[in-house]
Length: 76
Image (cartoon, rainbow, N blue to C red; front, side, top):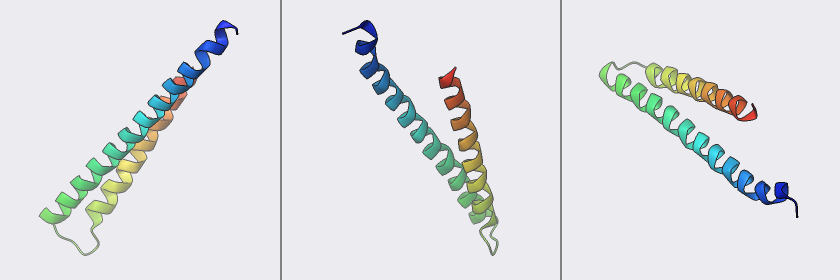
């Protein structure tokens, strides 16, 4: 076995840990923004739950930005 064969399982496990961390970060960002939207809808009621919708979508967009940024940094 060469030295490169020994590093592959550890590197692969390290990538799984990084990607699962990214998933938890996405969940946290989206939930935080959604809960803030729900709180705003409770404070300032409206017919369409507009704050929840706006902040949930904003959270998804921000989470996707961070995922793309982290994945491109991993490839460097």
